[in-house]
Length: 103
Image 1 (cartoon, rainbow, N blue to C red):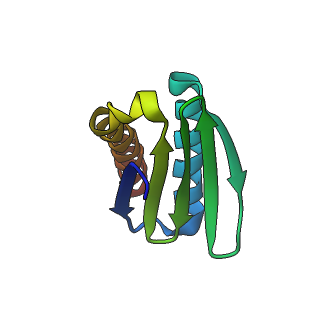
Image 2: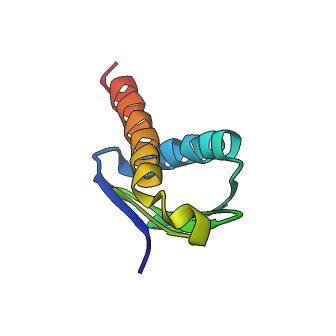
Image 3: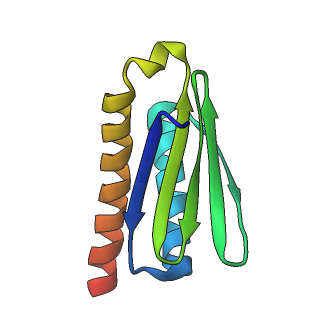
């Protein structure tokens, strides 16, 4: 069972969702020293991310994002705080995409 699970619905479509996911991946690579790999599919993409003590995936679909991550022993004690920060980063990226779409 993942230590972190975040689900966010959106109305961006797959192309815009991809842009949000790629931007999110760039931000977490810089901010959290993550290594991200993007796997593109026909109906959804997967962003795999990892670093010492963290391993997870973001599923990017036309109508939702799903993040699941497993934390190592040392980071597991901070699961709530980490989940909150990851959700905040994703929510900010979605808010920027929504604002851009409304222009």
